[in-house]
Image (cartoon, rainbow, N blue to C red; front, side):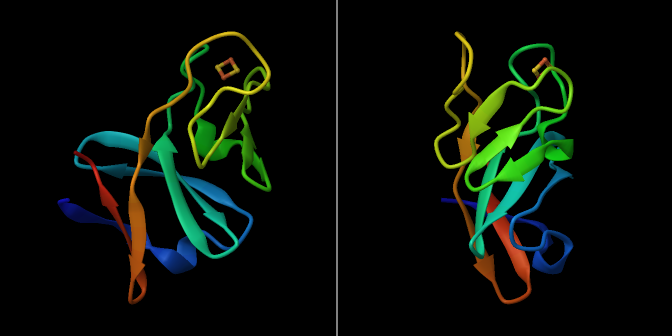
Length: 101
Ligand code: FES
């Protein structure tokens, strides 16, 4: 596992999700009860930015057409289609690190 720094953990408070770019990958980082959950930022419908969506529990709603994804599994919940890729992540000190492999 090759971890790279994604962002300062203070930038994504509990219950929120945000976008970040790491090594040319567009990611959405969610804070679920203090635990970072990282998924692809690119919605599998029409490439909407999931990191600008609304997070409720473990579910993010895409801001464009409201497809819903579970940020812990990447699973698409309310439509037929592909889910999004998930990335292992952890907090180290004040930062969130992600494994992009
Ligand atoms: S682009 Fe995400 S629901 Fe359409």
